[in-house]
Image 1: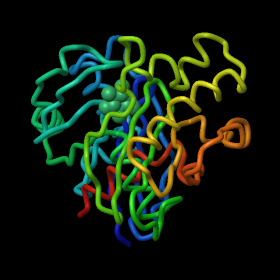
Image 2: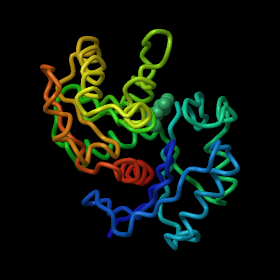
Image 3: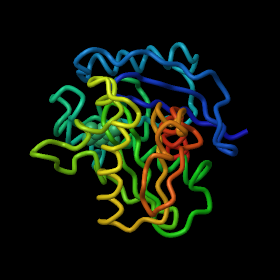
Length: 247
Ligand code: BGC
C-alpha cells in the first residue's frame, strides 16, 4: 500500500499524519502540537521532530512532505506573515533536511491543500481554474488550472487600506474581533468578489478549520462562481504535502 508522511506547519498548529496515497486519506491518527510562540526555525524544527516521534515515523523511509505558511521558492522561504521574520530568505528545505537527517519535499501550505483537493477532494475532475483559499490564521491560496498547480499566489496579501486583506477577513479576524458569522461573511464577500473579478475562476474551494462549518457562511456569500467547502478540511495540507513528496 503506497503511503507517505505529511506535516502541515500552520500559524497556530503543526499537524502530521501518514497518508494513504491511493485514497488521499489518513492511515494514522492526526497528530497536532501548537506552533511554538514566535515560530523561530529551531523551535519549529523541534516541534516537527516531536510530531514525527509521536507518529512513530522518525526513522521511516516513507516520502516526507512538509507544508509551510510562506512563499516557498527553490526550497527557500521568502515571506513571513504570521511567523518569525527569520524565515525571510531562509534555506528552509535544507534546514529541515539537515535537522531531520533525511530528504523532504517542502511546499507552501495552501498549495499543498490545493493539490489534495484537486487529487482527492472537492476539486476532483475540475476543469479550468480552481482557486482554493484556506481561511485560518492567515488566508492562503492555490491556483490549479486543469489540475496543474501555479504556486505561490498569496491572495491573502491583496491590499486593503495599506494592509494585507487577511488581517481583516481571515478566520483569525473573526475570532480576534468577535465578529458574528454575518459580519465576517460580509468581509469575505468583498474578498471573493474581488478575486472573482480578477481571475474569473470556475470553482472556489474553501479550506482551513472553519470549512467544518460551511453552512454558517457559504450560503451568505453572493458571488457567481460555485463555492464549496474542502473535503479534507484541516487535513488537506498534510495530504497534499505527502502526495507531492511521493510524486
Ligand atoms: C502566507 C501564505 C500562507 C497563508 C496561510 C499567509 O499569511 O503568506 O504563504 O499560505 O498565510 O497559512
